[in-house]
Image (tube, rainbow, N blue to C red; front, top):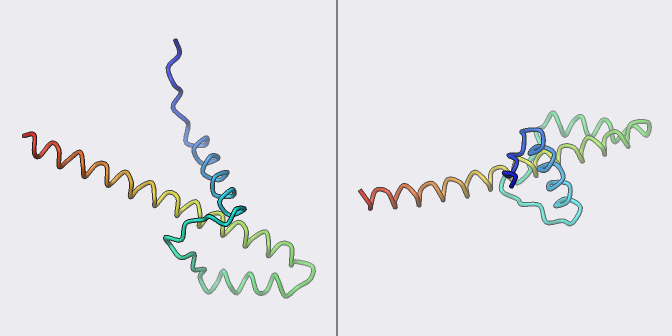
Length: 97
């Protein structure tokens, strides 16, 4: 019998990226952080999109920013779920002892 392999950090990041891109593709991305871009990022995107030679580059950058935002939102959801479970476990052990 083989024991289940614990995913490495890079495996987890790759899985997170795939999940984020899939959510973006299907329009089901969570909106915890509201995805607000900073002024510098918006300025860079505007400059890139204004120049026909770099419009595709600007779109790629926007996609990358959206993907990172979704990844962060997914991580935030997971942290909240973990915190909830830990709080329940703590309450259980407080009641037990």
